Image (cartoon, rainbow over all chains, first blue to last red; front, side, top):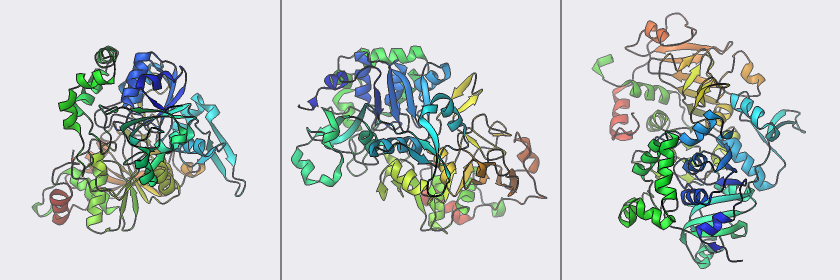
Length: 299
Length: 256
């Protein structure tokens, strides 16, 4: 089956109540075009996971698409809090299973290796663990080390239904490069049952074959490849484009209230037909060219 | 201030942070003061220090101000760009991180840190960033250094939520929870503290030039251990200030 899809086709493959792992980290390589399309298609009841909560999860949570977030805490860096996620937690409308960066990464790692559980030194003694024992007791346990007898905290693997990953380059089969730090993305994809790759550039398989050591995501794990430039806007993609500071500031401000956030959605999500309309609305070719990364700096 | 040398409390704190770092150590840093402290140590007494950022960035040399770890400005000229499992797993979890710098909404008499929420965890509260890598660093680093503003609302007898464990309730409580290491220093804009070896309660080490003991205690919501007559914090040298202003942070990127 051909994997090359439109964004709408790839999003339509996601069922309500699916567990979706997202590649964003605060304000970089967030799956923003994907989030906007999920909202437009009215998909709801999702479980969303990522090591560090990011703008993609925040927008989905604010739009009511997310029932449960499994994450390690997060923010929009100096632009502010994840207002929608935080509001959901404060008001009890969003189920939050809050870990640390490493405990999330280990849960994906265990999922990627097919392990039954993974021991970890983190979380012990903290209220993070105490809270998890209340809201996610089935995900946490203890075992005795069979070699030393030591007691270990163990975590259940995460096996998302689908990982959605924003990358710089991929071929039609989904073999993909992630340039720059990869945070949890490699383990996320390999833990998940399948992956949707959203790529800035579509490259021929010959380009993949000429630099195979760069392949982070293997095509055989990928169900859909979506070729969509500036799909992470307003967040950054290393070596492709910078974050749009003014737009993120606008989002951070609008999302301070539910009313402000809904107005933002009306304008930038519901008010546009598709990603191309969105790119025109946020400033078009000139603005996007200004955001394009310097090849030496990478931003 | 000695010999008429002028410096900000941020610079004094950065110098105090640098003094805590030894050559050859591996340091887990966040943005801001820890970066200045680490670069300063690297350029003076600790040239072979290694700096790592949790998302997979080792020894970057930024030339532009970043808004956070997610900003590629912060990754510029790094030696390694990898992943959480690589940084927080194969380095931190394995026990190779000597020092971690941590900050937060509030800390307490035993060096526990809260970055999660303010208010009543069971009732009305305001939720903030949560852990990120902070709990991992607090749990797995050989020692941690806490950087925090010296205000009564940020220095409490007990924090409202332990995101990152210090000595928990003191006196063996941390070890009983199965944790090694723990906070070794707290650096505020008025003083430096360590922790009593037995009770693990915060203990005054030195008071910054310009601050008084009354000043230090009046802006704390708990009583730290105050041994005798605490000395003044060693002020920065002219060379340290020159390095910070002219070489490490000429744009004033971090001093905010």
